[in-house]
Length: 64
Image (tube, rainbow, N blue to C red; front, side):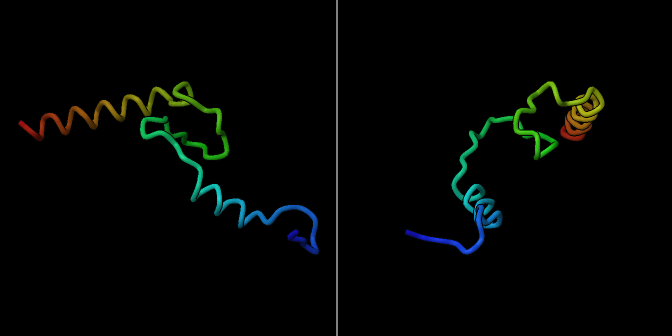
């Protein structure tokens, strides 16, 4: 059995394992706040939505 002189877990090792082995579906929403795992589409502000649509319009105009 593995033992450790200090109680608890090694946070660096736990974060490394999570980064390597935690799978997120490709269409899963990306949260702006990484610490908020439960944030969903409702966490997106209207300003962010307006900015995204403005960017789409600019790209559409640039293409033709």
